[in-house]
Image (tube, rainbow, N blue to C red; front, side, top):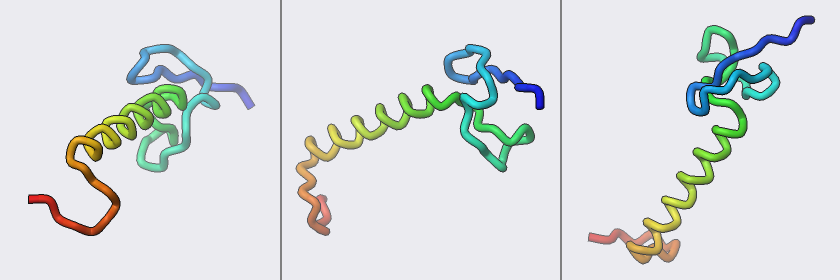
Length: 66
């Protein structure tokens, strides 16, 4: 089996197909972003969510802030 290469839509680097997660939604069966970029995006989103919760004062209770 020959290894295939793909370009990451975020970092624009050509990487081996093993550097991408699977995705049945895409024609080639791989996600558009490489694993490293996917991880970086997820970490940034998590950090942004934590900052937002600190600003709002979310404490984990089911209260609604108006």
